[in-house]
Each structure stands twice: as C-alpha cells, then as structure tokens.
Length: 173
Ligand SMILES: CC(C)(COP(=O)(O)OP(=O)(O)OC[C@H]1O[C@@H](n2cnc3c(N)ncnc32)[C@H](O)[C@@H]1OP(=O)(O)O)[C@@H](O)C(=O)NCCC(=O)NCCS
Image (cartoon, rainbow, N blue to C red; front, side, top):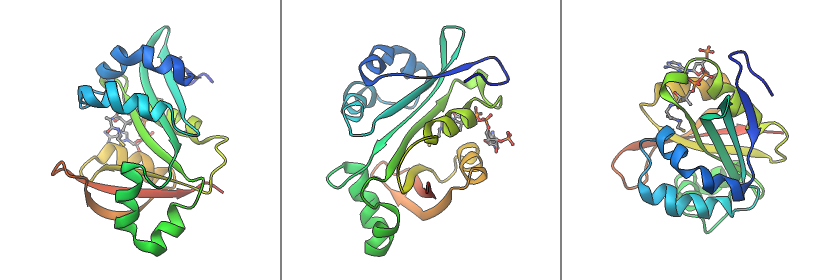
C-alpha cells in the first residue's frame, strides 16, 4: 500500500522483525532494553502476531504490531481484572486482538503514517474485538484512536510503573 507522502506499508514476518531491533529502538525511545530484547521476542512468538512497517525508501519510519490475547498473558490478566467479569466477556472474548504498539519516528508524525499503519493492521483481522492501552495524557494517540472508532473501556489503570494508562476497545465485527 502506498500513502500520500510516498511511504510503503509492508507486513514483516516475525522472524525478520527481530533483525530490525536497532531501528525499532530508535523509533520507540521509551522502550527499555528489556522490552526490545526480551518482551518483543515473546510477542513475536504469540498466536496471530502481525507486524507492519512503514518505509520511506529503505528506512523504517514507523511500525505497528499486535497478536491474539489470552489468559495467562501479563497484560491480558491485568486488564481482565480491571474490566471485571462482564467487561472481560464483552472485550476479551476468545480470539480478541491486542493492538500492542504503534510508533512513528518523530519527524514523520502528522503526515498520515500512524493512521495508515493502524488501519492496515486491523484490515483483515478476524477477531471480535481489539483492545489497547495508552497513557492517559497521550493526546495524539487518544485522538487517533477515538477518531477511528475506539472507546475508553477502563479510564485508569496503573500497570505498576506509576504512570497512569487507560484501556480502549473497538468492535471489529
Ligand atoms: C500516536 C502516533 C503514532 C500518531 O502517529 P502520526 O503518524 O502522527 O498520526 P497521523 O498523522 O496518521 O494522524 C492520525 C490522527 O491522529 C491524531 N493526531 C496525531 N497526532 C496528533 C497530535 N499531535 N495532536 C492531536 N491529534 C493528533 C489526529 O486525529 C490525526 O488525524 P488528522 O489526520 O485529522 O490530523 C505518534 O504520535 C507517535 O508515534 N507517538 C509516540 C508513540 C505513541 O504514543 N504511540 C501510541 C501508544 S499506544
């Protein structure tokens, strides 16, 4: 797919994602080393893992990924507790998709890359719902998601870092 600023969005197979770790760490400056070196390989191995990169010529300028969530996963279990039984049934039904990360290189933001990555990731995903977390003060991300049909389903959740997050959900069917 080509978008208006001449960038390509391409799906990248799990085995090739780990080779991009250096570029991913540049685009994702908040990520700890553990996130890129330990958590990412775990996510790559998950059921339904799907990763897309946005490229300007050969340079990676943004990425998005997600996978099928399920019980026993750290993020899933914390969100399930926060949602309670009814919310869990509504948003975390078997086969739901966790929209895990979306990042665009700073100098390429506000040019449609993030929105295109978002849309391309969810296109063709066969899941009842998708869920994500973002910081409660992350205005760009919240604006992007709200404009694309996501709703806040847990307004406040501290995953232990002391930084408040909110959880959003979107129906996919
Ligand atoms: C959030 C992020 C991915 C958006 O990427 P982007 O390429 O700038 O997004 P787009 O240009 O495609 O914009 C899509 C929509 O997002 C919203 N948006 C993006 N940046 C915004 C900003 N700074 N302020 C307000 N709204 C903004 C707008 O609604 C925009 O729609 P528009 O076309 O009407 O302007 C990018 O800011 C980023 O990488 N942030 C750091 C990482 C992050 O916070 N990721 C999300 C964590 S879950």
